[in-house]
Image (cartoon, rainbow, N blue to C red):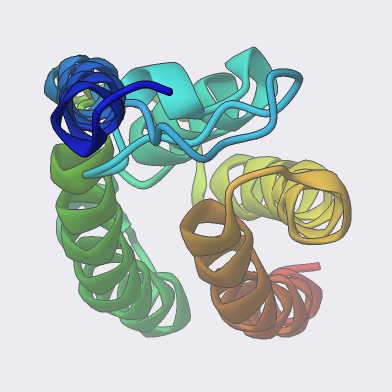
Length: 175
């Protein structure tokens, strides 16, 4: 019969080995208890996001940048619309930046240049862009894989719908 010390020593070695593997997994950002077919990360690194989620975040950041209608618009309606876009887009981009920092995603920082020939052309572009953006935000909210990104998309889709409605209303005043 084996001595109790030998059994305890072997059991202790197994515990130490299991703990070492667990800590090694934690050091790499993986949960040691994750199912092998699931990626579970600690701290929400970029590797935990699907390529679709990352692409959505980057596209949303670009779409929320730049809007010179508050400065370059001719009519008060377009200037008012532009001010609303700046306010809401700035708020959404700050929230998105916060999520991106937690997830380790680098968002674009360069504002796109916007040029339009008239208020009417600008509002036509805004209606078209917001229709496209609304569909993208709704798709991410329904089909995204990261809960934080999905929640952002769901919450922001409501604001994008308001922007679309306002854009159509402003557009109709210019016809």
